[in-house]
Image (cartoon, rainbow, N blue to C red; front, top):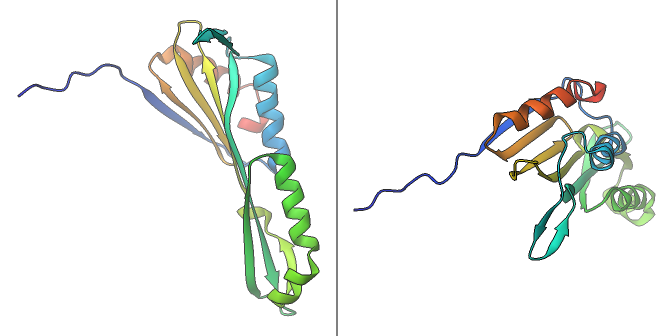
Length: 167
């Protein structure tokens, strides 16, 4: 029988944030900075004759949770919504909080449960060496994945050490 032959070695590393991002806007400020300033020194590349940006947002989602509390501040129900953008996230949250029919049906007052919000934005990055890897930002961590060269992680770690929100 033939053996499997290893083709590549990809790694993954996680940095747990000391303090989670306060909200989706704070997370997106860091993400927008990475895309606009390219602190990792990523390069453009071609796929099927199309030039790809050095750093590209490949996936994002934002989860909100609104709880309904009775007069004794006991939770009587909740609604969770997942939105594809920060704009949709803000709109959906506002709509749910203001919806009188939902409030009446739940039998309690709506409250934004910000502690249970979650966010995730994944960036695809193309290293000058030709390697493509991902950096994913969530509310409480940053994950670097699908890289094999330890120099990539070193560059990202050095950058993250300079960003107060990523302590």
